[in-house]
Each structure stands twice: as structure tokens, then as C-alpha cells.
Length: 244
Image (cartoon, rainbow, N blue to C red; front, side, top):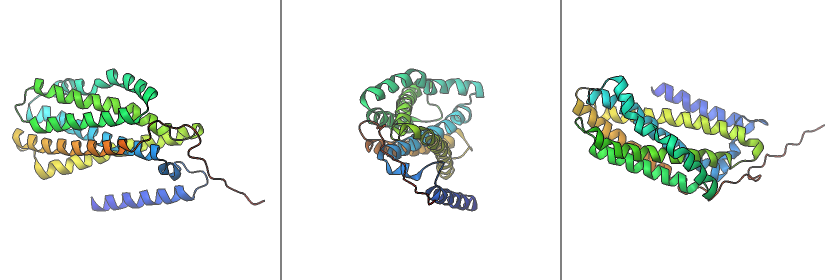
């Protein structure tokens, strides 16, 4: 594991170095000097890390701690994931009208409250009705924050640079998911186990506490966003002179 992490860090450093020196970079590193781009990506990274960590263990909780089958476990998760269909379009319109910072910050705070609430009450015999309010609250928070984060990222660069900016956003999103699961597994291994429903619930509570921390960090990043995204040439390309 240490070797894999070391190789990963070396490859990231090599990629950044290559992109800095390249005249036609895949992901211009100068994007990260723009507050809207870097803050929105950091907030989204933290949000997605928490979302994937929760989803990874929530399905297992229903099966391992409460004895549900895979189908029932999936159905029980649907109120959490289904909030995107309701909240997503509304959040997009709010971001268009008032800017991205408010919806992104509010969404991450809702994710933190819902995850923290669930961490406090989780137990092997917890009734599903008691789980629904914090699950829906956290799901609504993610669904509100997600469109605002994407709009903030693509709105921080020039129109002709939306492609690379969107690609960087997608890459960091996937990286956030992997990071969240890796941290969640490490936290669970240190606190819980699969030996009994009680041991699993204790580990899951610790994971939800870590997810709450992710959301709080993401909210702090969201607070650093400008009030509204900019599509003006805020990230102008460097001039390259070619000797003839």
C-alpha cells in the first residue's frame, strides 16, 4: 500500500510538472490560481468524498447490521439518492439567479448536519423511519451543492476553456470518490469490524463522523468562492512568441 501511494504521488508530481511546461496543456495549472475554480473544486472534492464514503458503507449497513438483502438495501437508499431529481433543478436555477456560493455552502452544511445526525443515532436496531430524516437532509444538501459546484468551475474560465475546466472538474470528482472510500475504509478498520452488527455499527458511526468533517471542510472552501462566477477572460492564456 505504501508503495502504491508513493507511486501515485510521484505520478501526480510528474503530471503537474509536465502540464506547467507544456505549451498546450491538457489541464492548465493556471486555472488553480483562480479562486472560483480552485475553491469550487476543493468543495466538490470534499462533498464527493463524503458521498462515496457514505454510500459504500450504507449499503453494507443495511445488509450486515440489519439483515436486509441486496435489493431491499438498494431500495432503502433511494430516498437519499432520489433527492437529486427534486433538488437539482431548483438548485441550478438558484445558482443562475443568485450565484454559486450560497447554494454550495448551504448544501455542504446540510450534508454535514445530516451525516452528523446519522452518526449520533446509528445502531444495529435503529428503525428505518428514524434514518429517513438525516438521510434525506444529507441527500438534499448534496443535490443542492452539486450543480452549483459545476457551474462555479466552468464559470471561472473563458468560454473557450470550458472543456479543459470541465475535464479537470470530472477528474477531481472521481479522485474525491476514491479518496473518500480509502479514508472511510481506514477509519472503519481502526474502529469497527464485521464480527457483529454492533461492531459494524460502531465503525459506520466513525465513518459518518469523518464524512461530517469532509462536509465541514468543503463548506469552508465554498465560503471562499466569489459571489458569482465570471465568464470574462479572468484566466487569460499566456502569450507565446515563436522565433522565426
